[in-house]
Amino acid sequence: MKSSQPNIGPTGRWLRAAVGIVLLGVAWWAVGQDRRLAALLAVLGVFCLYEAARGWCLLRACGIKTKW
Image (tube, one colour):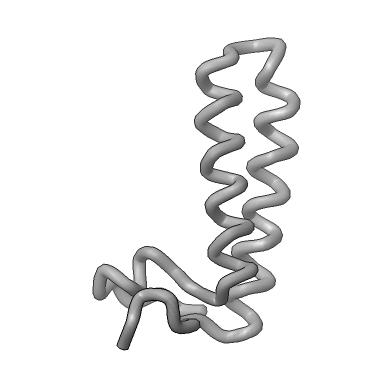
């Protein structure tokens, strides 16, 4: 299987999108506290949204089983 093919279902996509939105919200809040932390959280949030949009999970691509 190519890594660009979907490897998660609709539930996993929704969960990753929710996690991405939460991470972006926390990053927005963290800007006033620590800019490096905010940048890291923002990058992780965008990556989670990418996973949700593509239907692709990095952990699953590496062979780690996830529930959704």
